[in-house]
Length: 115
Length: 112
Image 1 (spheres, each protein chain N blue to C red):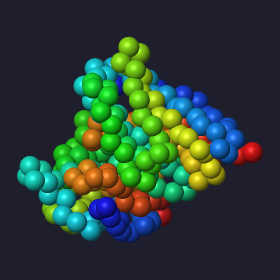
Image 2 (cartoon, helix red, strand yellow):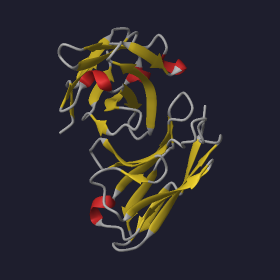
Image 3 (tube, rainbow over the protein chains, first blue to last red):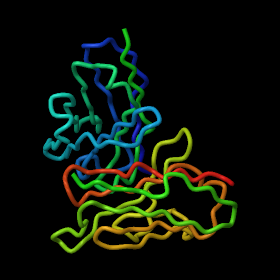
């Protein structure tokens, strides 16, 4: 079955960067887009962008340009999202999800930005 | 951006009751290819969201048939015909017709 296994919780300092992983299994990694979504405590969902692992093409929500960088490693079927210049506004749970239907989700990775 | 407005924000229901959630878009979600890319998700407490319905009315595999979706262009509805305890959580509509992909603010379904 399709599974997306995300990396664990992160506690990071303001101004630093963090890289979250999403390891895919149960399907052909290079055949489906991978999307990333942000959820702040008590808030709804916000789309960050997507990457197509087949060729590395990416597209970002303009709001996250310069904040998020999406990459993918085809050899390990793993997608990554790096968040830079972190502030308290970046404290959230980040999900990866497969395809434009978002038909499979990772369990979420919590990022807490605090000094 | 296409703004999705969900109503009501909170819905109280008894087990077995039928309920509906509305999702209205600020722009038509009818794509140039003739499809309408409006989906419904459920996020149970402490869990990741899961896809229930895609392209307005198509039931995702494994989703019970008490869930149904309808609508067109800017007005969409999710109906649950006979709420069960496992249906409690927050329901989101989302659209992928227009970039960026956007979500509604959510409708929390709770037990009365």
